[in-house]
Structures are given as C-alpha cells and as structure tokens.
Image (cartoon, rainbow, N blue to C red; front, side, top):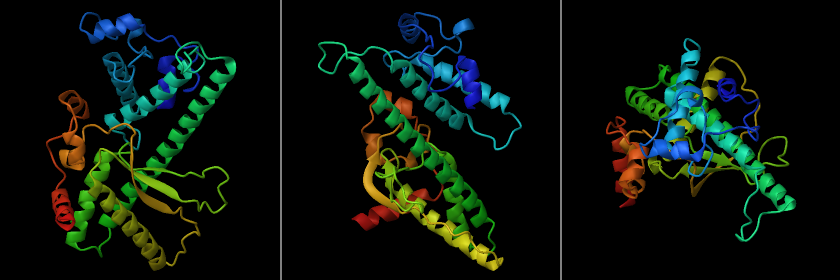
Length: 308
C-alpha cells in the first residue's frame, strides 16, 4: 500500500515530501465552490497541502482514487482489505506527507510579528517529528489489537464448548470489530516508552475514542479476557506450553482520544452525546448508518439501567 502511494505521488518516502509540488490553492478553491474542474489528467492524483487540506473536496477525491487503485492492484491477495481501511491508511500517509512538506518552510513566529529563526524552526520540526513517531506507535498498537481480536473471535466461535448464548455474543463482537476496523480501536500509549525495561512492563494508558459508545470499551475488555483464557486452555489441552511473555499492563482511563473520527459506523456504536453535538454539516461527514449491530442495544440498555 505504501509502495503504491509513493509510486503515484512520485516520492521516495512518506516523510520526504519537502520537494513535492502540490496543486495550487486557486484550483482547489474553484473545484470546491463548483466553479472549476476536479482532479483530472496530470492533476488526477496531485494532492493539496494548503489551508484546510484535510477537509478539501479535492483531496477527498484524490484519496478515494488512490485507494481504489490500491484495492484493484491487490485483487486476489490475502488478506483482503475494505476500501474504508485502505482510505484510512492513505489519509495517514497524506498526513505525514503534508507535515514533511510544511516542516522546512518559513513560518510566522507565534507572536505574529516576525518569521521564526533557524533555531526556532529546528525546535518546531523536532516537536513535529515526535508527534509523528507517537502517532505511528499508537497506530501499530491499534493494528495489533484489531488483529488479536479478529483471530481470537474466530477461535472462540469455533470452540464447541461455547454455548449458543455466548456464541451469539461473540458473533456480535465480530460485527463490532469488523465495523471499527483498525481506526476505531481504542488508543494506547505510555508516558514512559523511552527506556522501557526488557519485560515491557511499563503500563499502557487506554483512551476511548471520544465518538465511540462507552459500552463498546467494556465489551472489548471482556472479549480480550475471554480470548486470553481460551488461548491458555487450548494450549494446556494440547499439552503445549505458552511462551513466557510479560504482558503490558493496560490501564483504562476516563480520558477520551481526540484522533480522527471513524465515519460510517452503525448508529448505535456512536456515543449518543457525541451525535447530539454534531451540526448538520458535521453529521454529513460522520455518516452514521441507520443499521444497527444486533444485540448491542441490549447491552447499552442494561448499562443505562445500572447507572440509574
């Protein structure tokens, strides 16, 4: 996927876009206002890095086009990725590319009266690099979590000792995990990732995505525990010994993550308070589906009763 993105943009690395030539402001604004042509010809895959680049209609169309190419070229390969998963990955590349394109360019100092000097620019670029590295760590952990749950649910559903009621719960969790994909998993990070001891025991703080229903986090915690127990029982039953591994301690915090909202989820997976705060324009971007995850409403209703 990364190779395809770099080939299309003509760059060698995602963080090496300093010399990239993005589309100009006027072309993007004209297209956004319906007065100009959209991405086509030599500009069909040319990204925009100016003000409002993340929400620009131009970039939305370019990213969708790149994602379609990735999916087409990956046809027949396993595992198959949905177009939404590919788009999320492409947006992550674009975010890194835009940051690297902007970093070396002169900036107005925060006092608004002059341009920053070389030392100030170097400090700013160092902070940007630190933020990118942190985002990369979080994304890797979210990917590991998604795949752990996907494989674990498959194993639980294939376990003949699970009763039908429990299996229906795991089927529901499979629907939820598939809907959330990688982007919708909760964020994990540590204040002490540097100088981490060999056993990797420094605690990870788990933050719930601000748009996600809080019951999802509770159910995911129960799922992770069930997967761990099932793996241990399976290993013991086969006479195998699980490899000794020091698990990272995970502390669920009341903090909510402010990262990009996952759009297109079934309506009941969103926090109802979050949905109520959306303007019509914001709701159009979030695009909550009218379809709902089966059985999930039962758990949200039970949670509401316990809080009363």
